[in-house]
Image (cartoon, rainbow, N blue to C red; front, top):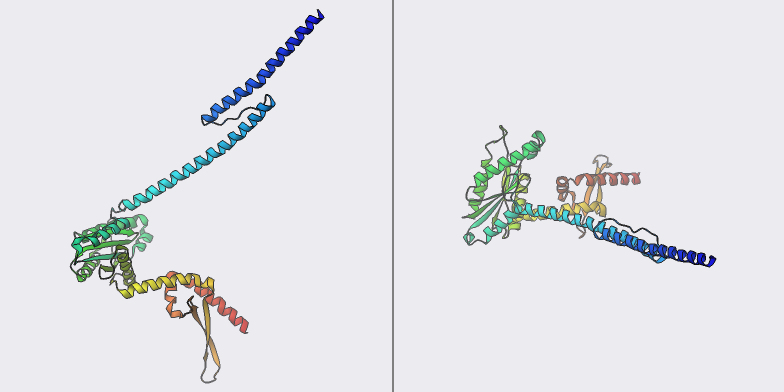
Length: 352
């Protein structure tokens, strides 16, 4: 009897050990299979630890791999979102290039450049002229400040309509940006006809504009360039007309100025001076030259003048009259004045 009970107990122990071993293998495997299914479906899944040592190590490795996959998936989703955002921005930018100005439906800069190049290359232009009128509104800022930008937008719409009416069938009206418009005269018989057209555009704004049942005067300044007299490609013609516009505004606004080689050279020189001034203070290129004023009666100095000089990178020394005007227009005069005051005071302190 005792032998039989011992055999039964051993068999039950073996059965329990077998069942435990099977459970320690089957259950972890089932959990890993289920976690794998959830992971492949895109969900978050971790395999429960436990079971025999080998399966427990395998579950730990699986969980580590799942965490890395989750990080990679999140990073990929973030990059995809950024890519979609960039694509949307580029799409909007391309629409701005292709579509007319949304405010007044005039061609934009891209359209204008294309049409201007077509007009220049057209056989009908042979022996004729193409005129570019660069137009700037003289007092739009006053309207914006006094009545708000919504009113200013309606002023721009009214200006666009008047320009389109004045242009008629001889050319193209476009809006470059803000308060800047352009009218292209295609197939003009002479440069004189182009200039006369510019004067006609000026006179078109002698009559007040009516906006929101209000009447207001809106003066314009014009710069004119002519193909092929001044330049031979679209971008150069626009730059030449812009330089002429700056001259018209400097002459008192509500005027017309025609491009010339001198104006283009002056514009290039002004740009070069402005860019150089922005770095002159940092590079220590300014100098002060002190000049005493002497009383003839006593031969004693009564005061000392501090004269500003600019030593450029090519070794030239520019007097203040050659660059202070550009400094004032660009707003750099504040930085230059501060440098002069600090340097003059420091020099006077050392001399006393």
